[in-house]
Length: 216
Ligand code: ATP
Ligand code: MG
Figure 1: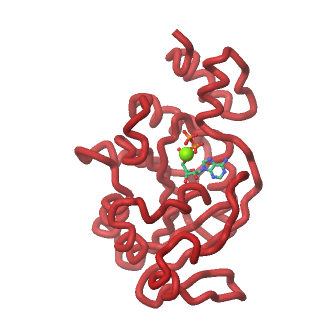
Figure 2 (figure 1 turned 30 degrees about the vertical axis):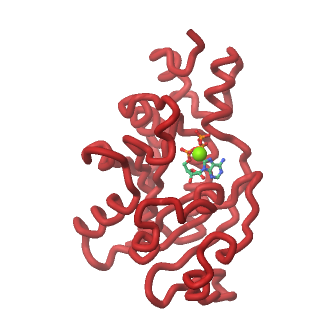
Figure 3 (figure 1 turned 90 degrees about the vertical axis):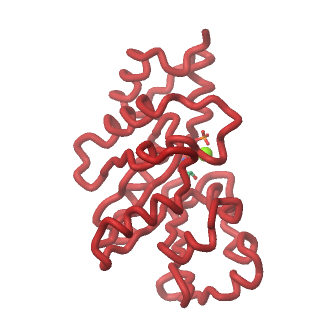
């Protein structure tokens, strides 16, 4: 089994997330993608984040009807900051050894991987699926990882995979460029503009019913 773990703040989830996850299923032959909202995102402590309950409910609505998309609230069940390392460890500990995990990030998130908690350990525990994102160039591993660690990875040109003999592999994959971000969606709602076709309609309905992201 190959599962994609898609971590993020998802404040809110949008078509950029959904379409990229759908394409990765095909590109990497994944059996499922699990959307895992962070309860306390380590990188976003400074800003005000929408309560977990709302962010997770919007994901549930967005993935409704897609039998390869799953939701997990595992990060809300742990106290303190939501570290991806703990989440990956949890999935490995609670499933069969044959399960292969692909941690999914956009290029912007992977660019700063060395700021993540126990990032070296994380790279050793699972594969990474790094999706293209408008505005972020894929400059390869040498620009992201320290030289000694980047040098460990062997490039398999035929399959376009960077393989670490001591750990997981990194798969850079081109997904359809959708220049959509949660921050832009929040800003548009704040300005009273429409977000139709950026977010699924049922998610928009939920936001409206719960008066999310509106200016006071
Ligand atoms: P924000 O603007 O609040 O940071 P966001 O749109 O970046 O929101 P996140 O929840 O921060 O959404 O992103 C979760 C993951 O999804 C990250 O790895 C990010 O790189 C990736 N991602 C988000 N939007 C896109 C997109 N349009 N295309 C490809 N990857 C994306
Ligand atoms: Mg982001």
